[in-house]
Image (tube, rainbow, N blue to C red):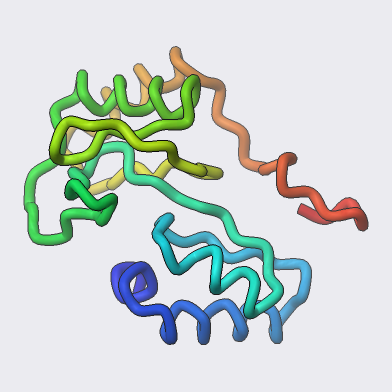
Length: 140
């Protein structure tokens, strides 16, 4: 569902509407893409833009779902630094682009995930709440 939601506008919109129908205070976390802003506006729901820490991206900022590999550990940590400190991500063609990111996704299937997470904790202290997206009501 995660992959389909990131690729299919109508499916992503249906998820967002279902979340809002269930509880208007919940937010929708999805892989950041060009449709997410439209989904947020049409469904009237707060979205959390997620970016992969360890998966490759194509040159047009799409997750490379076909790739079975992960980027190497040092590149992964550099990606985290770049996202956190300059709000950019390096694409498959080596160029950087601005990115809006509320959460960073770490794939638990990555065999080096424990080491990456330990080193990532030295870069940034994880926060489970996105205070930048707080609503007037106080709900996040």
